[in-house]
Amino acid sequence: MTTEAEQKVLDGRVWDEFCDALKEAGKIVRSEKAPGDAFNQAEGYRYLSRLLRGGLESFLEFRDPLFPELRCGAHETIKLGADNPDNRYESASINPRHSYRIYGTRGTVDYLGISTVINKYASGGTMEVTGHIDHREMELGPHGEIEIIISQREQPGNWLPMGADTNSITVRQTFQDRINEKAAELKIERIGASDDRPEPLTPEKLERGLQGAAMFVLGSATLFENWSESFLPTLNQLPPADQDYCQSIGGDPNIFYFHSAWQLADDEVFVIEAPEIPECQTWNFQLDNWWMESLDYRHHQIHVNKHTAHYEPDGGVRVVVSHTDPGVPNWIETAGHNMGTMCWRWIGADRHPLLNTRVMKLADLK
Picture 1 (cartoon, rainbow, N blue to C red):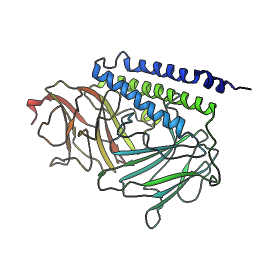
Picture 2 (picture 1 turned 180 degrees about the horizontal axis):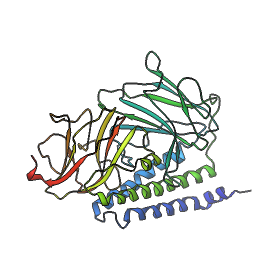
Picture 3 (picture 1 turned 120 degrees about the vertical axis):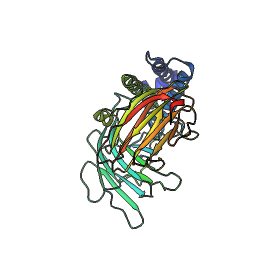
Picture 4 (picture 1 turned 180 degrees about the vertical axis):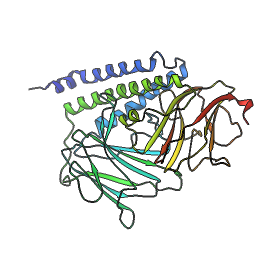
């Protein structure tokens, strides 16, 4: 007897429904408050294509929690949610009915944090953290070896808890100096999986995977477009974000976030002043487009951090966002954009000083 999923594969409906869902996601790019010019619209559609690549990998290729693999799902050409240019992001699907082991080497990366989460980007737009551990809490071997047990029941040594609804794990590595720091090299395995093999693809798995990928595109695009719209009342300001909301959508518990939107005429610059820098693991600022993608940090200087910044004699920092080189330190390039969003982070800070911002004419900048 043919199952419904088998029939959908045989008559092509599984693909038709997938394509229809993607058409629906395209409406997000044309949201009323989104920029309507061809440049920003083109970036919006490219953004959907990037989300789709990430969604297909996540929901179709690497979805099996019995055989998890850490994969980099946000990088130079897949971006979402103000992705941090200083970060390497990895994730894997897990199931709380099982226990897992992460193992490898610490490297010398400035910050290493691992969280278990309830990832609902495809069905509600939240990512609740259910457990967290970072390098400051980890016991290491004599050569930087790491072993972490992930389970609902507490374990001796390095233990990362799961909740009853945990479905994913997120690894963040934050670099200060990518050239000279060595990344942590980690793998994940289900405990007791050594003699098992994954099952072949089934029509049911294909249908779930395509549905999940399409829902991820729609859910993520809706979430972050709505968030961009919420920044418009504080245009060209950089106030603290709603920290509880940031945590609910996957923010790192060690980070205090500032988010807003920016817009500059051709002859204007945006100046951000941090009069005091707190004791912290690190800090950074980045410029994003309307879709909350970090701008192209491969070819443009679109962010600055604790290591790369130039400091004022009093210890403060001034960052200048400008379309052209203003001839001052800490220049952030707009990379062809005249509007977008932005993010400042205090990471592992003992306090969270506010920031001063102003727009001024390039000719008046000293």
